[in-house]
Length: 342
Image (cartoon, rainbow, N blue to C red; front, side):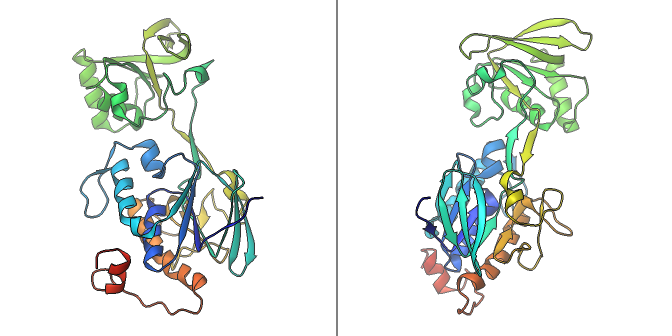
């Protein structure tokens, strides 16, 4: 076992809610480390829709998932948090009152006074289509997320699916791609009606193709896709020429080890009280999409609010003998000094 990394607070999950929690904790002089299963900071925002617009962040009419992540990172710079990416928390052990020893799958050990679970819906993985040998094409010709639109310029793209992701990326990539074919098992879509209308207009104008059926096999050597075999709804077989495939079959949310952390669970979510979003274990909090309480809304702005209240209670665990005086960043010279603006 490696030597324990000591910190005031350990946040599990580096999405927007976890990042803003660093800010709220930092204002109250608490040092933070963050662990995330992904290889990048930003959680679902950065992983699933880095270039898709978000419209409901207060005061910011439009921002992308990546843009929001970058702005939050800029905001928390004064507090110098430490990130541990590509790691999954496996166990949380109580060692004090409060006090926790947290171990990751990489063998890293943390000792902290407070744990904040900000893990979205747990760890998430795209559902893989049941196509023989698809693994050989993954990350070279088959992609489950669009991180940089530019990499798909001038490609012959086969998009598979009938939900919002499939339709959104059909419309967003259409201007860049050499040709786009949308494939769905039936001529009925679960996406926003406006997106479906736009797609059907492109098809009617001959600017893209729509096929009904399912992929049964992929063709191409060395991970380079050249075509997909498709079985139509009438069982007729056809070949679609493509060098890129984007399957959008949804995500499998896996709660993973969260279930073994001794926290009470309710439908794979963590119940919390709403004064500080503390769980049934004193000193362990849950904020963002992973928690549940009466009236819960799964919105980023709700997670920001939860992080602010969590920090007030966390302060009591980290500094039991220190009285907390509530201050505003607009008028407190000591807070402004911490932020480097005074």
